[in-house]
Length: 84
Ligand SMILES: [Ca+2]
Ligand SMILES: [Ca+2]
Image 1 (cartoon, rainbow, N blue to C red):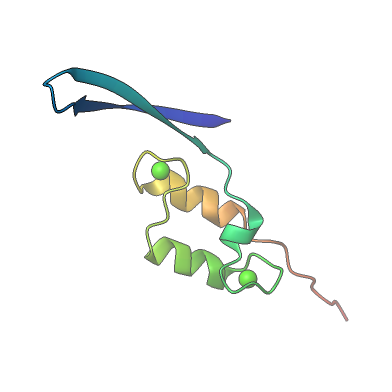
Image 2 (tube, rainbow, N blue to C red):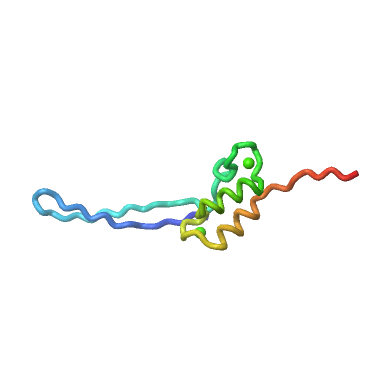
């Protein structure tokens, strides 16, 4: 899923002609693992997620909120647990 936002850009030429352009920014709502793995150790751990939450990482481009935190927490990769 992607989200697109359109921003108008109004340019006035030297002769006074005004033209309006629109700039569309499309952002993926699914950040790559490379972005989420902040210390590049190959795993998304609670340390990576803590850092992203402290930086108020906005996953889906609508501002940082609890949905971003929930998304980030769900990305924590399961750890191998050795049972004896
Ligand atoms: Ca990591
Ligand atoms: Ca958000």
